[in-house]
Image (cartoon, rainbow, N blue to C red):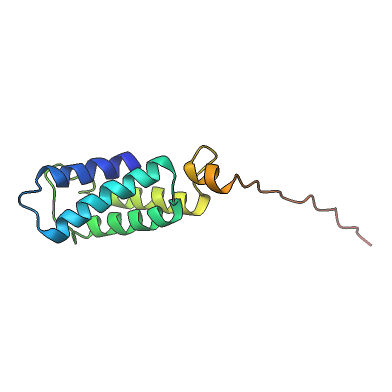
Length: 117
C-alpha cells in the first residue's frame, strides 16, 4: 500500500503545473504517507492518514490524477482495509518503529483447566 500511495502521489506531482496549492500539498503528503508506511515509521499515524486518503479518493473528494490508482470504489475499499489492518496489527518486526521503540512480544498466559465439582 505504501508503494501504491507513492505512485499515486507521483502521478499528482507529474502534473504540478495545473495543480493548486492545496492539491500540491495533498500530493506531497501522499508521497510522504506512502514512504512512512513503506519504511514502517510512525505506522499508526501514517495508517490513519492513508485511510483518510483512500476514503477521500473513493468518494472523489480529491482532484483526479491521470493514472488514478484508487479510481474504483472496490479498489479504494480494499486499500482502506489493508491500511486499517496495518494500523491494528502494527508495523512489524523489521520496521523502523520496531528498531526505535523495541519489539513487542505478546505473551498469552496458559489458563489452568477449571475443575469440575
